[in-house]
Image 1 (spheres, rainbow, N blue to C red):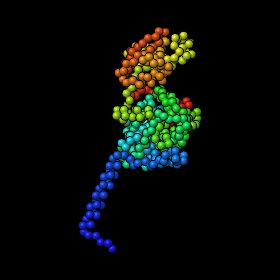
Image 2: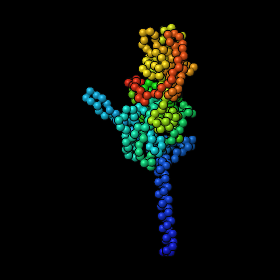
Image 3: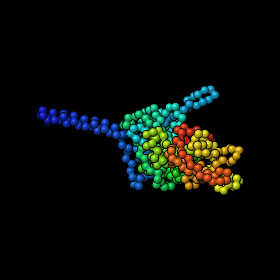
Length: 382
């Protein structure tokens, strides 16, 4: 039997104590920095497709959360709570979760379930309804959070691999795979705005997938699953995801202030079609007809006129700062690219005469009335 001197015993005890303190300090420092590191993902070029799928799911699915939203529904018998489900992605070690606005819209209560089945009450942080993006937050320990990294949607190619993880019909963290089927698709939101450069995918997504990530073969977010084209109400292989680059531009302002400040004109419009222009014998073939002007809004202050009116057919906006306006999507995009207080010059056709009208844009109201689309072929996947 080996014996130790008193000095050696003291030294070993001190060494063990120092080592223990160092380990505890490291763990505490690691917890404060963020979640446990994700499972390594083999370079896609040297891994089989099956291996890539398995590794991405094992690594990233713990970062996908199950969101339950409770809204108040008015019926003839009174007001009753109604629940809907969706998905979201943990995007930092502070507990911020990226999802779709339509998942959390009008929610009186938000609950989040993590991969370890722990449940947390979530707080609404901010949203941009025009791009169907929202951020919520949970107060969970960093050690329970798996952050999903964000990639880029700028250089996607049709045919590129795409994986969706979400909670379709309440089935937790379901993986479906496919490809990027199309790029630069326009998609109209529930409030009537048009999101540009939307990603189309054939990775199966269904109700409950909304807000979940669309991933590339490196496990990075390239889109936020939002809607499907469906004559039947179920997945037919045509899904749409909001580009992650759109979300990345919005997130700092959403987290800091809860909203994205955008220029506001204060009009309701409808497109001028070539057929209508010909029928009305107009000198232009494209533009946006002003149907209604919000009383006291920026357009009203500038003197824009809407429909109906016994004296004229309504103003037709044909350009903004010299750039042609072909449809309401152009108008919304151009106005939304400005900040409140900016001045823009509208090219307007009024009673057959073209004129320039300068408008000082206002601050877009946080809660615009939504023109909800019921039925139809596009389903927003709440």
